[in-house]
Amino acid sequence: MLVVTNRLTKRYGGFTALDACTLAVPPGEIFGLLGPNGAGKTTLLRLLLGYLTPTSGSATVAGHDTAADSLGVRENVAYLPGEARLFRRMNGREVLDFFARLRPTCSRGEAGRVADRLGLDVSRQVARMSTGMRQKLALATVLATEVPLLILDEPTANLDPTARAEVLDLVREANARGQTVIFSSHVLSEVEESCGSVAIMRAGRLVHEQSIADIRRGHRIRARLTAGFAGVPEAFDGHVRVVAQKHDAAGAERLVLEAAESLAPLLGWLATLPLEEVEIEPIGLAAVYDRFHRSGEGSGT
Amino acid sequence: MLNRAVWRQSWGDQKLLLSALAALWAVFPWIYIWLQSQVPMGDFQLLLRLIPEDWQKLSGVPIAEVATAAGRIALAFVDPVVILGATVWGVTRGSDIVSGPLERGTMEMVLAAPVRRTAVYATHALATILGAAVLCGILLVGFWTAVAWGPWAGQVAPGRFAPAVGNTFGLMVCMAGVAGLVSAAGSHRSHAIGGMCGFYVLSLLAKLVGRMSDSLSWVGWLSVFGAYEPQRLVAGTADSWWLLARYDAVLVGLGLAAYLVGGVVFARRDLPAPL
Image (cartoon, rainbow over all chains, first blue to last red; front, side, top):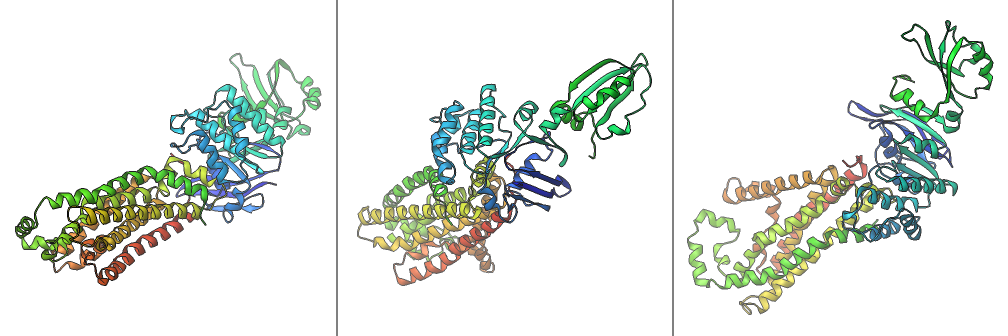
């Protein structure tokens, strides 16, 4: 595993920013990190980089302990902060020069090419750049760095749709070259589109981890029942879960089921149920995310 | 231990302030000596006699010494242009060592690279100290040329003011080190600057109290300005250098010790996300 955290915890007085986070990211993965503001994503990333010292627990990146050997960690990582801020007195070209001098694995030529692809005018002074332009400039320095792990904290925030698509392409290209990517974002569609697996955080805790392939295999079944629902057969325990079961205004029972994997084994059982108005749809990342952040389900999982 | 990229960036950051203070300190000795020369020595001595005896203690040297060309030139080192210039350099550069870039968000971009925190810190500190040395060099050249070729040419040996310039360098290192320590522990540069303003005012008050009251003379040694006595260093004897060594041992020693403690604090502290 390239990144391993073991019950990693960060507390500030009585406030727990990250609570016993245990996570493993294999090499070659694009790993999505999801959660609302304050969920603990940035705290986790800053702990990985050694900016913060854990209150308890441990983490390693490429075999280096993040608390004891942060220099070793940073030799293997390129990091884009959530809101990249650069030297305001420099122009874009000077910023790229600076970072190329600062770290030997950052290619100045490649940084210039990335900046070109993102449509950035590097002759402009940073102080005169918009937030999006500064984000592109920081991305150029990060994506031009040949290291095993890229940590991107909301890399597409503040970017226009064209630049967003270009950044996602660049991330996929980096991954194709063998770089592992940890990708934090609020935009579920781009995580679903780019990542191999995701972790969902809430209130400092890692509440769910799943591969995107598994999420895509899952389906949601909504139906109206003409008779009572007897429950999910034991044979499908762990495969099908009842998400909602309630009566509508007409007194009919409304049922929402989620199938974790392929629908095929379920079809026979579904055919025996007194269903009408059946809708079947892929679950998608948004539904999984909502399970933890909108409906209140998943509490304490 | 030092980082070349951070070194260049630090010099780039201090270039403007360095240029402004260099220009000011290059011309200040000429202007000061010219202004002094406009008041004849006899008139100046009359003026000094009008000062109440208790207030004369504030000069730090016998009043008879002040009423000489060397004494009058030495007062330039306690002029706000020199003291505030030295303090502005120390506080501005020292406060920018950690909390400044942390607040601006550039620190986390720099530290994302495999660079030790101590290297970033030491490089900045060295650039600040070297900048202070450059400024003091300019101040020395300013005094040397103004004394050698100015209105009082031939009356005083130009080299007599070198120890006083050395004392100014000590003050700059002291202010930078203490400001660096405050900056290393905080996340807002404005807090570091505010703290240093308080430190400056309290130091000044402590020195004044120590000098005005015989029974409270020990209070003067609670002030860093207790070791900033350039007017005592213009005798042009070996004693001046010995006294400078004692004063600068306090000032430079305090500054470097504060820098060192700040480095330890910075290496161990959490770095919060910029607001």
